[in-house]
Image (tube, rainbow, N blue to C red; front, side):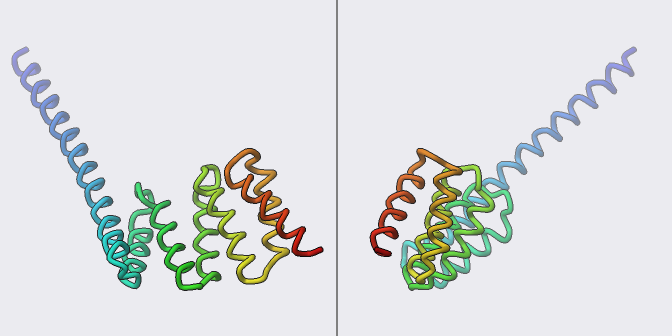
Length: 158
């Protein structure tokens, strides 16, 4: 009986150690996730946009389930918008929309993709995006803004 009890205690102790190891590795992953993002964000804040782009791209490549993916996409797109590279910004917003389609950030990204289309002169494509936003997310901030853009497109085509 003592032997069975001893084995039970050893197994219980070993399982608790394993759970602690798993919790520790989970914490380490969160720290590494945060550090990678913060590194890129630091370059962004210093206006070292080339290095920031590299950092955010690496972050997205490595951290498929990272906590800061949406923000990394947004910063990449902002850098492209700042440099008038609307085609690249649109691609980033489209990726963000595909990944976060059912979240507010994803709908906002789709709206911004429509803005990029407008800036590049693709009015019909922008109109299609704004119309789709109205049907997929009525009442959202993106829908309100999309409706305004549709009105402006209507006025400019008259």
